[in-house]
Length: 80
Image (spheres, rainbow, N blue to C red):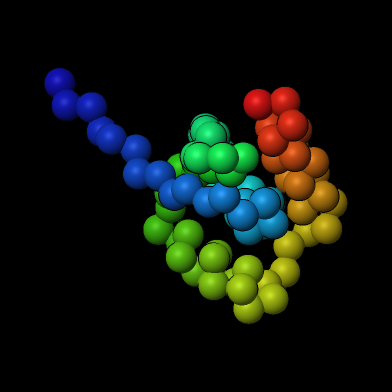
């Protein structure tokens, strides 16, 4: 039986990661990457590149979802 390997996207940017999480990308892991940098690991999707472009081009996201995403990612930073 073949197991399918999950494609992932990694980001160290807090606000980009919060935006992606608020727009529905699934956070699957996080890890330290040299110094104090933390990498957020998302399950990749076919529309991820468009979502990243949306972020850099002032894309919109539900405000409460964004705040909740920032808070949960900060929790990982400070507790993880």
